[in-house]
Length: 331
Image 1 (cartoon, helix red, strand yellow):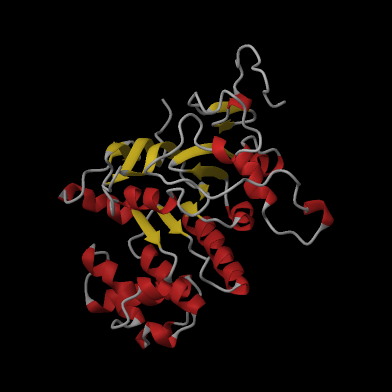
Image 2: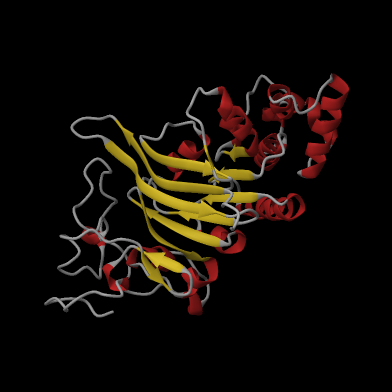
């Protein structure tokens, strides 16, 4: 019998109470992430990526569905049994300025998880561990007495990474972890994350809207739209042969300086992402899809297998589509 995946999500729903209808931010997501893997989660703003990340960590409760870590369901919020899981799953947020307490020194910020989770007993042991973590992420330990405002943006994000590593987690959830940084600093942080993954055997759930970052760092990619996964597959396959029209639109919008990577005409989507409190009937993407046909507004697509090893929530990928409908787009 094979070992369970490091992280498994089974039909996870996260809704927010609102008038006139609840906001269905995450609406039936099932995913798995293996040990040592980097799974990128991409999509437009408002697709539910960050909400899903917070549900995984327990910052937000799930309305329904199950989150498992190494085969064991995560206990509910407030349950003391959840604490050991929190040591194994840590998060790196988008904005290091908002993540760090301006009243704490760098040493105190990094050392705080060690105190909470009793990972270094005694002041001397904690000091040694903090200095080791700073060295691990490329920070000079002499900066330990400074405050966040005395560091650059890249240095502050390295502090956040060191703090996330303090409990020796197996999984890091990175929510737009480089989007607030300059391009040159982004490259340094991405190289650091790749190096830490190799040295410590870490797994990443990497949430981003920047597909260039995805191609560099990820093993697999999950594309999210309006609370659902619409395509999932190996990174190379998804970039070379995207199956879902939404994925093709995202890739077509990536800026390129080469003629080989020029945008493909006719693949851009129309309008803005609809409200998650009132998603369209049928395929949720059909009002914006350049390849929609008469089946799309009336039926709900499932994730159809797309070789090699991918899945797409699109009727154009249905292996048994039935009789062709009038006006249907060509495959």
